[in-house]
Image 1 (tube, rainbow, N blue to C red):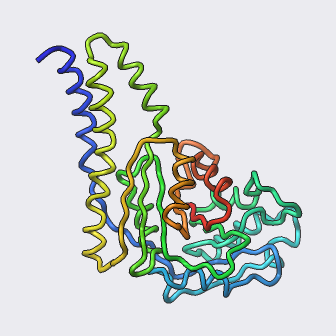
Image 2 (image 1 turned 135 degrees about the vertical axis):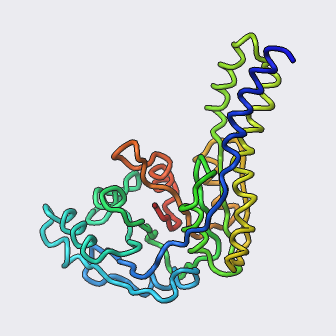
Length: 283
């Protein structure tokens, strides 16, 4: 075996070591849902109707938080709202973009939503202004690193109705991958042709192996939705937009927090701004 083959095998062994992520279904509790509104007449029935068909929202206590409870003093509105949520401890917060904003701000979520997604631990479901009579039939969980995302997949599965469709999408950034391959190609001991073929293949094997186990585990839990695994190279934001339309997705589920920073996860914020016409759950 040549030195180059040995080095490439070392790369492969690193990838193989991560192939052992096994999915564990961890259904989130949905006992209490808080509906946050910047009006004094929140439309509870519209939100209830949207979640009614999902697995986890059968016996749920809904609690409306109208503007009168938190927004009377605009200067103290956000800390008042966070404090109120701490008191009632909901399992899910449902609201809309740009709360307390008098103008349409299509490039922003607004300071209230930014704070809700980062300053308190409860997942936040953003409903679009044109929700109308939409119900959940198809749910898509998206992440640039699907392997090991038990919480993300469990939330998406819990909110998918029986006989519904659960789309699990992992898009590996092709621009970043090409940068790595270009660097590897400058190492004379490693064959560029082998690296260009084998490393991306092994990299995509990680989420593929993880996704292959999910449908089996969900079936063991008596969950009957159709699981559609998607693993591909591409441009994350562009490809996710196309996938949402191609699979008629009614609800998008993403990780909104990044443990390494105070700001919202970059992909979550981009999707929240770009895909404003679909409900979005940020964990």
